[in-house]
Length: 268
Image (cartoon, rainbow, N blue to C red; front, side, top):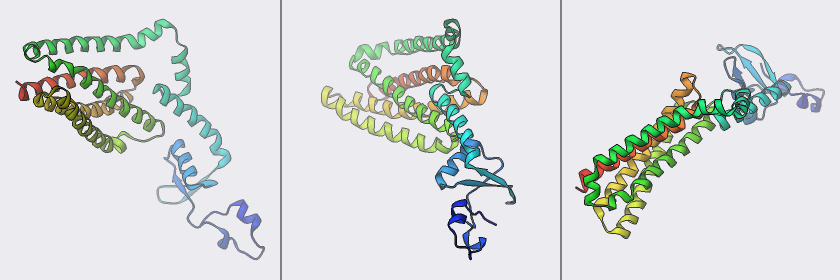
């Protein structure tokens, strides 16, 4: 029917009935709610306890503050582990931090080798446009900027995603807003760089190609930065070692390819 807090009961006049003191609609959760979600519900509602109900609304029990405190401590350790290392728990985070050099290399080097292969592919892509670069050396000046911006935008998205996973937020809950943010970021960065490159070098065609590449790379970087960590987590792999290098590889290749395609279509 409701809840009566001990504070209200002690302070109440003797003539009042429980119906006058109780909270008729107390904050409630269902049996399938996770511990961290229950903790957030308790904090957001500022409630001393949470009512646990079944799917049909029938009363099942109460989660008190005393029961919630140990759970909060455990969830806090797990969240820190996920934020810091994208791991499932604090014990795994400690093992990863203390593992010997051989294990560290085993966990990291394969993904970095994949990134090295991607760098080789990037060199081959740029070599395929050697004639274009020779015809206008200005084109080559903007490759580092485009690659960097794609990596920076993707890194920001990955950080947001790590924090979201740590508090139980699902990928689909932030996917649309992150994609829109990526597109708007690309538009703003592209517009700024368009004015800068045209003002300094006076080549409007190259400036437009760079702006289009920045817009495309920012959007793609956000999509890759969301897709890879989510995929690694679903597969049971540790994204701390794999998603970063692999995302950088994909973002770099797509950014360079997009840029040179835009150059070919607009400049040459």
